[in-house]
Image (tube, rainbow, N blue to C red):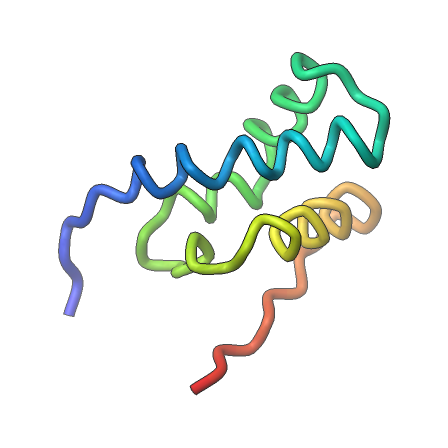
Length: 81
């Protein structure tokens, strides 16, 4: 069942953590980190409630973003029951 759920508050809580990791681990400025994140397939998936990507913690999301940047692909984790 598809519902129109606004997850933007959740995304707004997750994004700063990912940006901080990009800055700390990659030595990027906030502007550069933001540019990378907001133009990624990961961010597009994060904004889509149906993907359920938003439920992953930002360290995992950071790792997925790094995979996307390195390989051009994202290997999504399996759902755990």
